[in-house]
Length: 69
Image 1 (cartoon, rainbow, N blue to C red):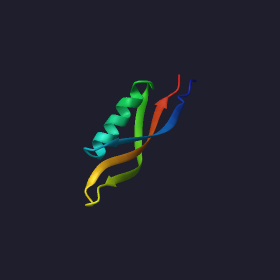
Image 2: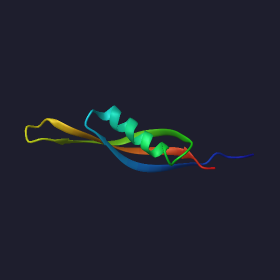
Image 3: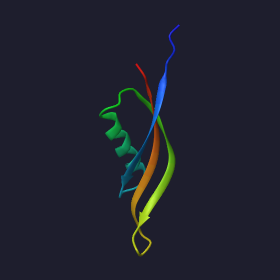
């Protein structure tokens, strides 16, 4: 019986648009070199702000799982 093995990597992605865009751009970038992505967890969210307190950038830490051949 064959078993499926998955590996998890952690990456940080950012966007000036929002959390969802940061997640999508991170996954898209990783998918260029990692095949078989099966899921992701947002493990941390951070924002950068201007002096006025307005959010200028959203950052997410992603844990991405993929199958190992």
